[in-house]
Image (cartoon, rainbow over the protein chains, first blue to last red):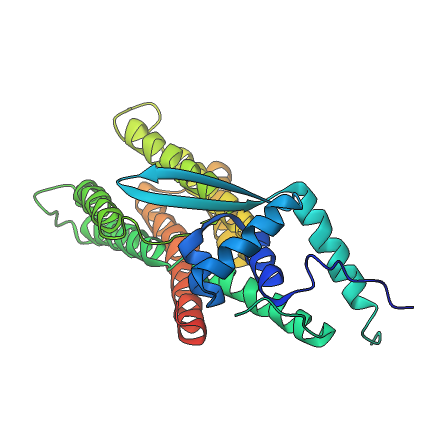
Length: 95
Length: 199
């Protein structure tokens, strides 16, 4: 029986962002942009969607005259990612 | 990368690819374990040779660790300045590792000035602790084993009546197994990840 996949995570860019953040304590906006090859505008929109879902936190600050946008995954985001991976497993035959 | 729906197969590949990229971004380059492992092994083997040959250098070879520490601090400060403003992800364990090694460095400096604590057992226990903790935190078995080897050397010194010259050989063994070899493995791993992901 296939489980439904969380529509917030089942999109290329949002899933890429959450997969990056799951292994890190926090990551800078530019780092996420570099790793996902996304445009700034698109990345901002998808980050906001993940934030609205409560999956990530976004903190903006100034450090050494540079603007920093730091993103980190929340416990709710970790749970959603784990559920997503478990649901994804049902689509593949067990070895 | 765009905002688009993907197949289950593509999802799985994407997750794997992104996790690999995140890991390779924070992977240790192995520079400092190699640097300290080689230096401490060199110092202890040189002092061992001095004792065995009965010919001594005009200075304590282990004093080389002080300029080495200064050089390390300068390089770290320079790199921090050079990379100012560049995107840099933070790994889950990096802060804990940094604090553990800072505590180790402070402990080593304090003990090197103390006559009572200046015993090989204290050194081996001190060498082993941050090495073991780092290995466990980054899930890197060669370093965890290196930490255990340091503690085994402490046990050897406690149980057997080992001469101070032989202690130096144990120090070299600790430096090679706890730092030099794990550092070389980390370096090779980093270079492989760099080649694969263009880090």
